[in-house]
Image 1: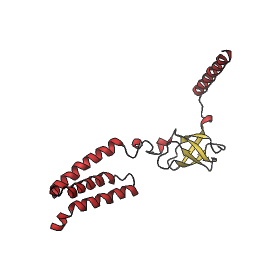
Image 2: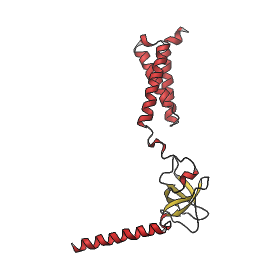
Image 3: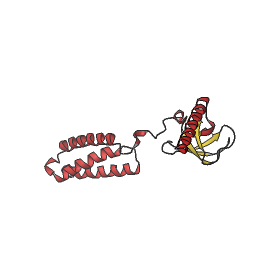
Image 4: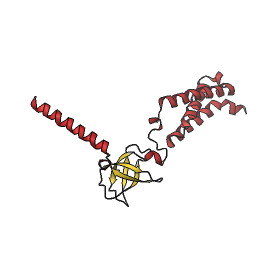
Length: 181
């Protein structure tokens, strides 16, 4: 039992490095918090042997673990606070994207601007063909990995039309003011 206790700091350090490597291979699995805590506690035990007792090392793991968890959450190392993740199929409704393969009522593919880990979705149109490169909006998420889309320029209600006309009128007015000056 004594050799194990003598090597406990090294064991903690090695386990921490293994968890950090596991986090690199499986991002988002949250191994990094425990890995950092074990690495730091193991280093303290290796560098300051009088602190290498099991109770002290356990307290160090808990303390460093709390600090690592706080830093992990506060500094958002993976970015985005999860906003790019799709929560369910209903959250896709209203999302916009671009056609990457021609979309027909039977076939096609789009890339959503905020589509999560894999932003590419099989897509179908309500009717007609939507050419590659067209901006589209999801009108029916479908509940699977096939969404129904419509071109953005086709989705315009009376309010949108009136707003567009008013903007065009303001633009023409600006152009005439610039020409007169």
